[in-house]
Amino acid sequence: MKRDFLSIADLTTAELDEVLALAQRLKRELRSGQRTPLVAGKTLAMIFEKPSLRTRVTFQVGMTQLGGYAVYLTPADIRLGERETVADIARNLERLVDFIMARTMRHESLLELARYARTPVINGLSDLLHPCQVLSDCFTLREHRGALERQRVAFLGDGNNMANSWINAAARFGFSFALACPPGYEPDPGILEAAREQGASVLITHDPAEALDGADVAYTDVWTSMGQEDEAEQRKQLFAPYQLNATTFAHAKKDALLMHCLPAHRGEEVTAELIDGPASIVFDQAENRLHVQKAILVWLNDQLLHDA
Ligand code: CP
Ligand code: NVA
Image (cartoon, rainbow, N blue to C red):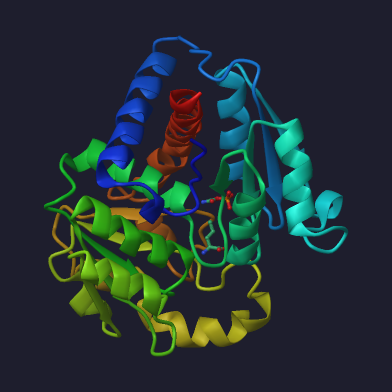
């Protein structure tokens, strides 16, 4: 059956565990010099409405390592919904490629691509969610700390796509999650409610110290996400108390890890001292995007084959 990966909530905990186990295997094999051609001859269309370093490179390199090929479509090439409708783009691409990955301004565009394409669609970031990043971060956290259930993840900053995906992950993996954000910048209420109904432990506060109290991980992201550039100056003022620096980080556990999805703005959401310091595992996070996304591609491909 065709499955999509638009949200961490699209997969059960057991399915997500399968993906993470596969990622671990692929990482081990790659490090021992093996290139396993698990999607040999298959093609991925990569639609980007916003810039990217990690997502683009890891999907493209990942497809190559798996024996497939990736086609990069720039914002100017496609102009989603402007040059032609999202539905028509989906109806074309499904005949030409095996997978679609899209980074969109509007989450609705991803839903539409998935609705009209018979090929699996992967969310490479939308205004609502960034599931590839957070699933990969869960993998990284497991590598460093083992079982996720006992972890407490504190996120300082905006209740944005990253925070929403962390809330979805808390519902699936059972760790506790705390977000400290300025009033008015809370996460999506529907995602929060659904996660809590599924038993997720999620705290939303306006107090950074409360979120960080007892945290195993201090996480942050840019204050101004792609597409919100007009609000940058106002956000810099509002978010200043939520910076991860020596003072705020001291509220977390002594051995807490510092995580960031990158790109980072040193001196804004995080100090250079912290992100370049010993607690930081940000480049492990960046590397693991490759292994986890390869696993997502292989897993989605396997779902198609199961049904054939
Ligand atoms: N973290 C992340 O998704 O990076 P890019 O925006 O560079 O893809
Ligand atoms: N919240 C950020 C994440 C970048 C990877 C953005 O959407 O721009």
